[in-house]
Length: 332
Image (tube, rainbow, N blue to C red; front, top):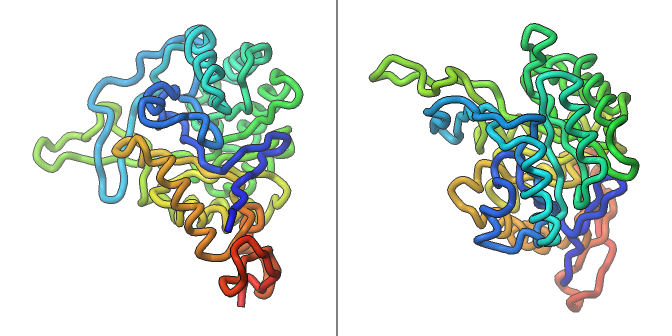
């Protein structure tokens, strides 16, 4: 039995749905020591800013039950170094590159997007809307539909036609569907969700916060149910908008859960920190999970949790010869 793992993100076709999450796979070189980065559906870069950033002081990481808190402060070399060094390397490897961008103002997002317009090798742009807006008391853009939409509109206007723009959303909001709809109305071709959740840990011996930045973003398996909920709710409201599911993925079945909820692709984050080959392992496990369930095409599983019992999809009957598809009820 052959499983067709191809998927689409708007005008972009990917050979499979597995990609790295921004900030968790380096710029590709780090993971390239362990596997061919072109084997993944895409590589998502760390969030690129207009100028170099040193990030926050150490300690930046703190382990929590089933998760990790991080407070890196978007450390990075800036757009000039990225265009000169990192993006060309990814292009040479044949990787499909989704460039995450960040800024402290709408103008900064637009500036980075504009610099990418003539750069070869950009598959898509992902907007990190969880950055603080210095023009609005430091509130993150993702916290309000109007602010998020303003950034999306500026980035879309400065991104070349044919390159999809994805808005990365936070679950730390009252109404994630409302923010998602505002971003889609402003021109986002798709959505990435979720970003880390805002959290904190205190050392009970030193009596001090465990992160130098006091609070940080919680990632890892602990947040996966939140990610599944957000993907499910947004897909129900915007079924035609492609979604990249993110949050606590460790296995192929975790990926399948997000796909059933409505994701067309899934990014692997924290798992890369302790297993640099996690993405390729998870891809194999997803293939196995689909085979075990008799599903021949990944796209048939996208949003299947929303469909009524008895929905027909292409499946393989184990009693039929290998490669001979039959039509069966997917849900009993």
